[in-house]
Length: 412
Image 1 (cartoon, rainbow, N blue to C red):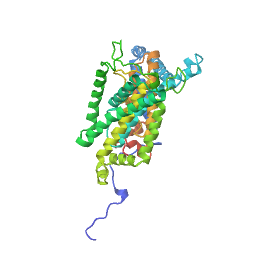
Image 2: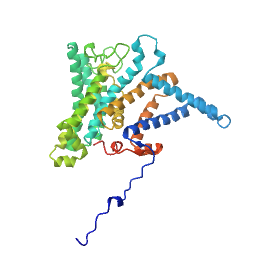
Image 3: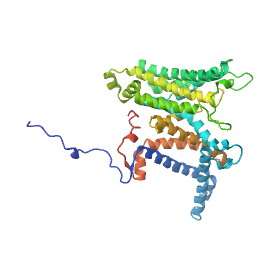
Image 4: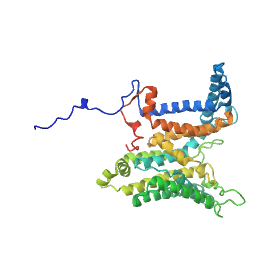
């Protein structure tokens, strides 16, 4: 037809994307690994800058530069070696006590990873539905409150007692998460605001309960509850002194269940569809509000399981610090795991290793435990900026768009 203009050839279409740097091809997993390397380098610089002998040697840098570098290397290597020994294996324990003692660092890593994995799965499921669940802290607390109450107040047979206590934690977390989902679905209240406010409500509710007769331990001046009965405690997976308990198995089962839910079930398909495009899902006849409620109920239940792991497997008594900041660290675990179940498990183990190793690092070298928080934040920051990492190492992006999913809300 005259007057029409043919569309331009594909080769002639100009895009605004920056050209990829030359070099080796890199996928999203390698981006994560390189992000960790860059974070460790930045952490090394922080250790060197804050090390007193290194700063003292820097005053004579122009007359004896080698001394400053030697002191800096000594400080960094000691800190990172202690971090590794506290997280994976510690040669200082070989030949001292039982053979199980040699596996204590790895046991502590997996023990710390358990609530991180569960909260990471909670946050990740909400991400996949288009929601940002900041309520992990409150959901952990409410799960721990109900599980703790069943644990120290009820008297049930051994196996039944721990099962009922875990189910109570699931109910507590699910109710707290479901409340935020219901507010989102019915009133349009933003889940970030509602979950943050619910965190404050849960924390102050716990503080109040610890002053009441039922939850306050008799004869104690501290805000602490009675100790959970032995019949309600999660069993240890290995002999003493290893503290790794059955909560880690629950976390792995939860990851497998979430994988099936998202990839094999009708409910999971609707959650992912709503997360990808609420308007398109609504047009297709899917209940967007119902998806929000279901997602937050399941997310809250997962965080409630983290509370059960804390009160029934680690602490055995309620305090105002029962959540141990796992509610917020779980958000970074979900970010690093790109809201996918098994990568989230791997991210949880990594952050659990940093948590476990930081104690040994601070004890043996005096390096502040806060360095681990800095390293965790830097890892997530660099993973969220894959283009920066690729430019630093002169790498090309791989064909899949996995590393770009962070910017798109993990809806793929």
